[in-house]
Length: 237
Image (cartoon, rainbow, N blue to C red; front, side, top):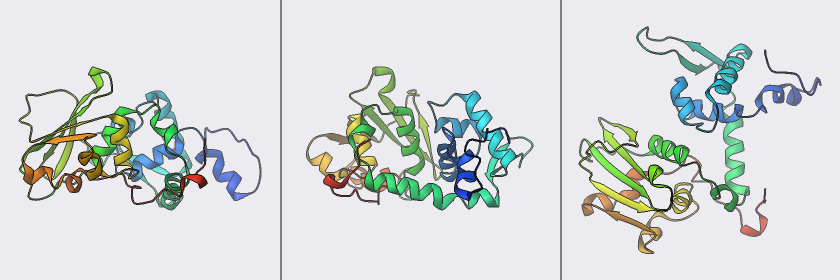
């Protein structure tokens, strides 16, 4: 184990905190629980973490025995997967996420939004409904960010969804125009999808048969179902 011991206590909480509470470690576990297994996909979910630090943290988690790193297919890059001990951390990660969703105030989290993370999270929680055309392409335009970060395309194809940041002359089915803060609040379940459309804060254009069910195929964050506690009880941080 390359991580330095900090607490030097026999307490199991202290012992597990030695590696779980290192910077970025819990977010790496989140990415694995969200389905990422390759180094590149894990990195895409942690765009502000250096690749060298990610490599080091993954190595530590393999050495500890939380993750395994092996080739399932010789023609593909090695995959990271949970060991039995690592999989047992799922409720730990989820309860922390659910606690934050319920108890923490909203505003600090939307002051400096990581657009890459938001779009990657949207991509992996959208719903490729069976009656959508194949492919089905959605252009999302974020109207309050720099031009080079504004356009994103969700490509629903063959029961999967890909995310593109470059226009490849797509034949777009649905256009969405929205601010990044508003999109984040909708995505996280803090504000209502249909209300944003009715209020004109989200403009969605395309065939009505697709736009009227947009909230169904667009999806939401994995913790959006956890409702915020009353504002007077929320924690500021």
